Length: 495
Image 1: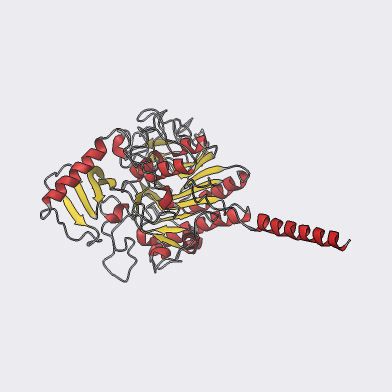
Image 2: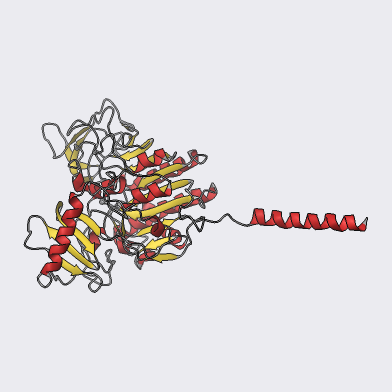
């Protein structure tokens, strides 16, 4: 009898031990023999506007405090050498979504205007279409800026606005068409202007037109393009951040039970900087800093909602900016210098125009507190997310996108692009740059005899042009740049 009891007790003990390990031990983040990662349940990209390297306190800002973005960095990876593919709004966004530099598509101007048409072709792979193939529901909330309508000037602002974000692959779109300093200053829900009164039709022109009665002054602010009518639909600039943040939080709540891909393209901190009164005067960097505080609050609200719904651990969040900061850099060292150690700003081909603050967090799979100096580009998001979701791209798709997934997840700190390419400068596409082996060439199409060459490893601030001293290096880098722009298929090691 006693033998039976002891045997039963022993079996019970082993069952208890086994049950403990089955329930208490987390599954491995990935098979050590297989580098294919686990697919995240949700993916959120927060793509800010004109946020520069030194605008975040986790990147060194002292006049601005960004506790929520700092928290995101603490629970993930902060990248110090991440870049956009252009220092211009539309070209940068196109590169993020398509995996191609903008000069590969004649429809993509550096900064698209209200009358410019939709830029994607029907069979072109892009990020939302890729995510739909992986069974995510897709949404874009915020700035679109990649064209509406089939042809130039064909937009019906008082009717259906197509093709646009929906045709690009987003199941849901709530946002605005171009920039917050351009017209129309209205929100679009799917494919129609919100709260538009048919008795007060909306008229949009590039320049003020006395005959049509359009004006650059909208809601008390001078805009780059003109508008008439649509009074009931016109936004209040100080309310935009709160409004968009509410839409993002509502979307997460509504889609909590299904996998989603959400691209939140905040208007902050693009001019005109008009933060909500609660943020005014909260920084030591004027309205620019106050608006960064507002952006950080938006990020905090998103993180709070994910926490409340127990979605944080299995949601991959990528934060970045479409280009460097806009405006004049301060001369006084005691003032906030948004560009940090880098030369230039938005619209310039220097590091300050394209090197942007970038953070990735995926709490269940990515170790927190990492700082990575891996060189990569927003061009690489498409190929990397294809790998992330187990998809294969065709050799003629996303030609400029490299699979950088191991580096983005902190699994390979040595992975790096063999070169880095950006397009744009001087308010056009005439400046093209390539970085390779520590060197950076800026090639000006309209001035082929006046390139600039910098050795970034020794001259991070791009203060000394070495083109005259290293003409052979200029020639080799120019050939590499032209070779990249002319190729029509991917190369070995790219995917």
